Image (cartoon, rainbow, N blue to C red; front, side):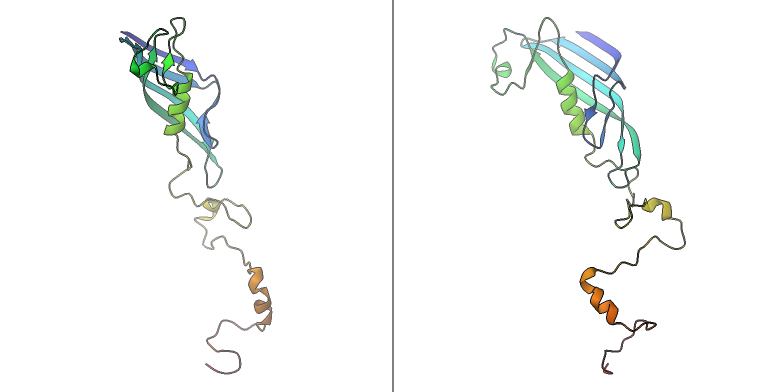
Length: 174
């Protein structure tokens, strides 16, 4: 058994569209490599900083991701049932080396949030003007637009000027 603890730079951006481990970010590996009958069993943790943007308001979001790995890498001549799957999910030991890149990419993609948020109650952006609604949360007058649905615009034009809302029906009937 060999233990391996090292910090390496991320070889490329690892993650999903809105949040990922940036290229060159420090990736901390704390791994244990064990020789088993089928190959090499790699287990341990990987942690790294993440950067991205909020899915609602598009502000910068930073955090950390930690994943737990358990991967079997088969010896080149291994022919056991566990290492001869047709779907090639089992990695191979090549020149006494195991490549953890793809297992880490897969695990990070599953661990990161699909829609990262700057905070749980992020109000997002105004659908009319694109202003960040969080900037108006403490204002006495909330952010709004007096927009009339184009389907109702003709009816709004029929309303006499200066007349507020009333319970009277046009024509004098209630």
